[in-house]
Length: 246
Figure 1 (cartoon, rainbow, N blue to C red):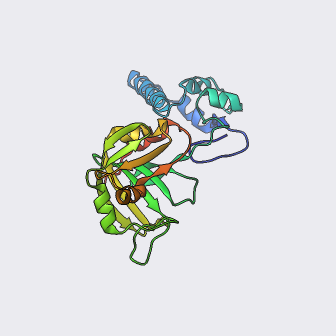
Figure 2 (cartoon, helix red, strand yellow):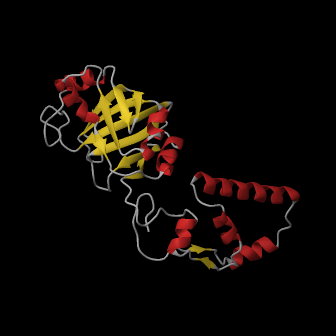
Figure 3 (cartoon, rainbow, N blue to C red):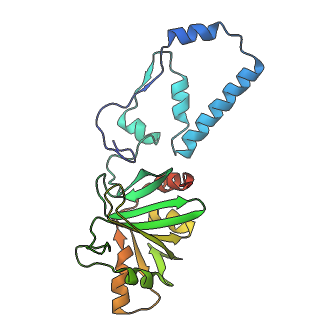
């Protein structure tokens, strides 16, 4: 089975703790109407959390039906039907990861540097291209060529971001070097929220520069990336609900 970030073998198990001492202490407490109301509120919050994660609320019903000390061990098919995991036969090229105080969606397996990051910072939405290679001047490089700072600024002026068959305005935000995860250069663009929301149903992004020339189109490949298949939209949804706050 696959979750957003991991592939694992074995049995997924939900345990309801026996907790004899806890149960004994609860038995000695007379619950008030306010206590019972709070319990209903907490159940509602938990079910709402499941819905936000895209997991079937039937999971709560199954857990609530367990006796103390009981287990719910869904089969692979049950786990997929309840949307606890993604399908085992789908190769997702995007995953969810931590970024500072928030979350981001990023391409590639763990340990891969080159790719795309999609995230929000306060009220802004950003898409970034990351590079594992840089020249002596600290400029981002692919296996084919490097992108001087002047090229990056020039190609972003008036450019459009193409997400699948949709186009969006974009602006250059900043270029950062030597990130803590091994990223040599990080080039980010400010884009509309809808550009990031469109990523799961696309398979690649490209840039269309304002000036249509061979030289400019070559520079625009700085933001070109392809992942080959659609991916779970919950990854982007979670990233955009957990923005970097500062």
